[in-house]
Image (cartoon, rainbow, N blue to C red; front, side, top):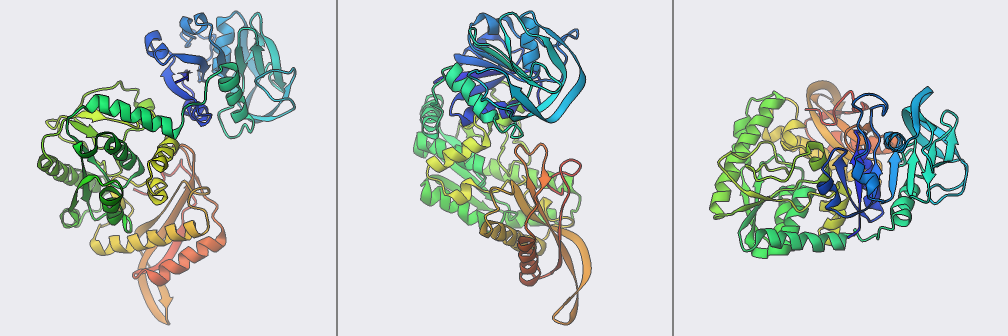
Length: 510
């Protein structure tokens, strides 16, 4: 399969570059700029993309382009710092800008070229240096008010540089630019599709597992479910899935998990209702980290017991996805496994050894969802909203009791239903949920004084969950959510809307 190698020089947007290339149905991998030649060339790239970064290329110790990139003769696209590193390596001149460019800018395309569409498009700049003299063989392709060379290219050598960021949504022509580089200039074939991902994953799993037994901790979360579904497609009854119902899940989720794995996938499932155990352990506990620790320890002990009952298993399925790999920069490993689904709130004990099966290891979340749909999983599961490891316990501020969790569960159900009915559950909101506050206030219901708890509604828009902005939900939708909660959820008489971005706040309240 054709691929593109992306070398990361420290840009906050590096993962976005990889996502945009994948959106063109071309496989790519993101490597540290200092990765070994053998590691990078092992994917047989059709071209290289050099990311941005915070350094200045002319400073001592600044990261440079590895020699093998230019020696390969393959097409190269340098973005921001990548463009400056390309200039520096090939004999051009980079210098500090008189005026830095951060944010939206307009460029003027100077000559016809295969990379940029003609005209004066808007782009997103983020740089303090600029190209003062392009390398031999390069010509300016575009300019901006503060950058006489906003884009450059050596069309004969198929080497290009962009001072702006095509990978961000603030550059409307960015997708077109990256597709032109990957598909036309590099000649990569768009073969990275859900069907090809599934076929390749099944082959890999069968080769790794052979005839050994496999266990998977499942939660109803997207990653754990799609990972388990892929493994089941590959090895069938060699897989045993374990589901621990903590009593802290959202409305109807335990039933959905059982139905998905037993009826839809027809997979072996051990389902344990341990809600009583968890509520007893959480009685009187209010501190968030104490909640997490208690839930983690209880979950580990129960999972360990059920894993023993499932029989000797060598492999454990883990729903690791590509952002996890990129952020940790960790090599493949054999370790004391850690459950990384939404109920992963603690690691398994060190003496519980497994080889990891990670079928989603090189997939982004949007690709995981596409694979899930291609496997026949229901949309309601594939598009399930993100959920914290300890479940509703960390959305139930203060003491966690069965009564308060049931109250929160019903309020959260209403938030989800109303956003879905308004068509806002996927587009406008990346994550939306209810939080139950240990704050009582006076109200009037049916001519009677009430003194009841408060529900906060949280809805955010984000691409990467590293930063997030509060969603500007229509007033009518908020009004319906509020009205339904105070009328249908006993013990709540006030609803507030959280309008704090991340940062300074986190998405979750605890």
